[in-house]
Length: 171
Image (cartoon, rainbow, N blue to C red; front, side, top):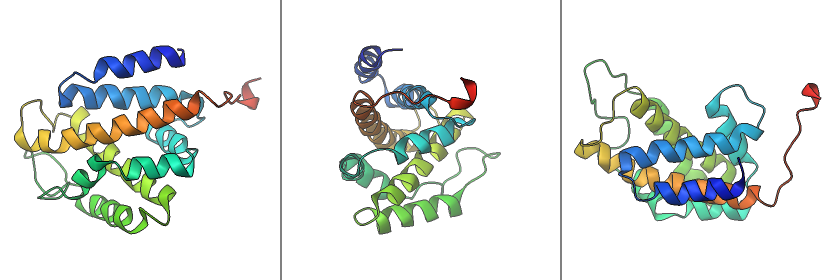
């Protein structure tokens, strides 16, 4: 898949409802991350984000959608959507605290915390605990989609100037 087609796909998803946009943006990020040699998609995304420049990290972390996620009321992972849902309150709280604390001085740590929150949201969505019409779900998915869009744009921008990595063990 070429960078041009990834850019075109990014443009195509922007008009989708938040519920669908979030998943398509997550999939784009994972597909760009296929160059990372990690077996799990979450780890590939984290590895990809770790390679972003400091300025790209700062642009993402200063996106207004990040602030919207941080300021959700009630906070992430504090409201059950279904009786069988398991809340990850402590994990979400730790990630939110790290994001707030590290945002300016340690952007790589803050970005990892932000990615942790996005992965929590993605897992809830894919396992049926987010719906296209739930008011709380839209309150979460709208800024989460905005954050993912900022991340995908930065990753695509930086990936066009990078040479693909070769897995030497498969050569």
